[in-house]
Image (tube, rainbow, N blue to C red; front, side):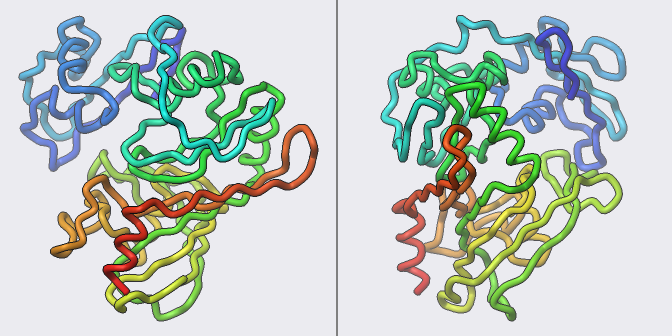
Length: 313
């Protein structure tokens, strides 16, 4: 991805399993936050090229084809405040801590301007969010996946944003997640250390990539063995790579329940997780940017997670 003058350019190379796919379907798979109709609109506007030439929505791609798409910048008017029922864990002049629910995208992107956490925060905070990340991501210093629940910190001042960004860079923020994973662990705790990068065989996925990945470390411990076919675990992140817990757990043969991207295509009968992976950001701890004191915030397990635990006991 390249950024120039507010526009974003994404460049891809088609993989073997994408040979013969329609161009619009390929891009819809790569850019999951954009609708297929929006992608078709960009193709009509000649913002998409296939091997250096203007593509059509129905164009068929082949292995090693080069695809480029240029997304126009968002304007201030397109990111509008929306009244939402936000689950606020804490708020002061610098920070707001949110317990994010399932199926909520954190920030707007081209093709999805409404219904995001940022839209709700702009209404609640009356626009008073850190401006460091611009129009798209005001106040957003880190994010969690759409289908992951739990605690998320948002910065209301630039002072807070710089402080939290530096703590993230230094890996000093305490981030603990809870998950339900397949299979029983032999050891009660352990560490997965493997660099994470884009999966060369499937562009929708990340993977442990020793050559091209970025360093990633996940510590885990077993909370309970449930019925010995699944384990309830806690994960502590040293780094924050895309899909880190999902990738690391799958790499050691313990994919997350409900994660059809890295685990089984469908869960066992009676254990459906309709909104994606069973993963919850349970704890976030850091040095408060203004007071200099360590603070810690907890988000209770959501109902769906507790229901699954009862079924598996």
